[in-house]
Image 1 (cartoon, one colour):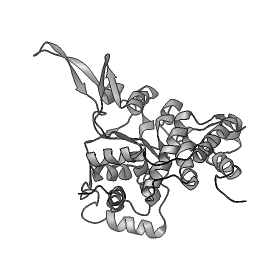
Image 2 (image 1 turned 90 degrees about the vertical axis):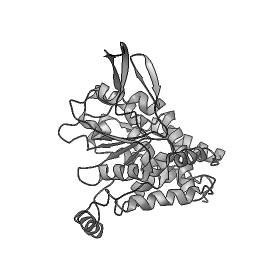
Image 3 (image 1 turned 135 degrees about the horizontal axis):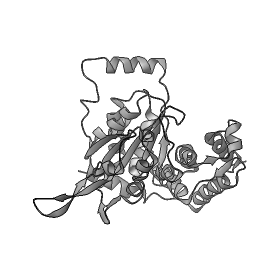
Image 4 (image 1 turned 90 degrees about the horizontal axis):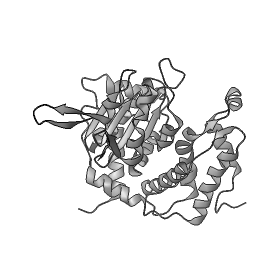
Length: 316
């Protein structure tokens, strides 16, 4: 059987669409992160389908899956695992935590303490976990799908800057239109939820092949310069206290490469960079207190920067 990347990606999209109504952009962004070995932060108000999107994607993949519901009493060892004495063998034994899986749904991640949140740092950056001095690799492919409510909601803890930077991209779902909501009501008020009947359409080996393919997409020097210019502009903007890191710049190019694959191309266009910039960069910006008081948003700063910078190959 011939490996067809675009057909495989379309099959994944169509499968998730059986559950998620009218949110094609959110679905594509999640798939782009998966292709780039990235992790996704799904942020929005309660009830708009954050957990359903994550669960639909995980059910579409023939991979191991675990979910952890974050609450204030969740401890780092619940996530990373722990070692304990086995009286029968007389040896210390490792008991795996929730991260020993391929797809991890971290539900309402900002409802747990910063200490517990930080236990995911090594996991998300290096694909491994260290417990009592012993490092263990995680199964591949590995992806964290985290959901969170807006930080001004009761009982939430803001994620540390270092953790935000490890999320490849952020997805905002938004409310459905009236027509879309009618479709949601029709699907989810029947005898069986469409999520329960969702079957895998992609194997782990195929995901690994797709991930390898991303790095082969051509990125010209002009596009690399364009990305570097955007990133540098965030670091000197008067409304920005902490600009985009080199990790963010790499993520922007990687996401543009995956975007090209979804479009059936073997090269990046500047439009791919422009499309992905907000999802990949906005959550990495820390605005100054003065800017926040004026109601300036990271998305607004990025839009201004991108609109003001020349696009490679554009006329005029």
